[in-house]
Amino acid sequence: LANQDPLNPMDNAELTSQMAQINTVSGIQQLNATLSSMSSQFSGLQALQSTSLIGKLAVVNGSQLGYTDEGVAQGGLLLTKLADSVQVEIMGTDGKVIDTVDMGGLAAGQHSFEWNATNADRSKVAGFRVKATQAGEAVTASPLSMLRVASVGMVDGTIRLRTDSGAAFAYNDVLAFQ
Image 1 (tube, helix red, strand yellow):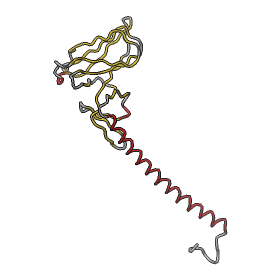
Image 2 (cartoon, one colour):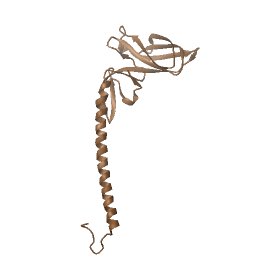
Image 3 (cartoon, one colour):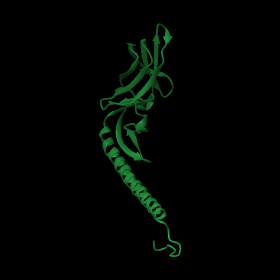
Image 4 (cartoon, rainbow, N blue to C red):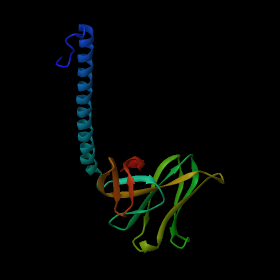
């Protein structure tokens, strides 16, 4: 109003239109500030809630073994269909099979296994591989690592998990928690 030309004043419609535009811009700025605040609070809440995952087993794609305090190695596998024979081979760093866990026949789906590693030198254990067959034909079997969560943190706004073994991965990479 202070900057109007007194010889050529704005009509009421033009003045009302400009005031509505100013109010709209102001409202959008307030909305952006509110959403930014809510996003920050949500991230903080996620970080706080993710601390409840410490100590749980995270199931992720991979062939790394997780170990309990008692020296038992844990892993998992995912079968695409029924298998009448499933064997988990524990692999050494030299590429040779250290031991075999015979799981017998298993239905399609996710399964876990344990291997007594109390007498094994963990530094010489590379991981495991899965061999599954049905009537002599190979069945697709994906190895699953079952690793204990040691700590959680936020990196670039996403939750990251670190395991007892030192492996780190994004929360979105976890298939399940146990």
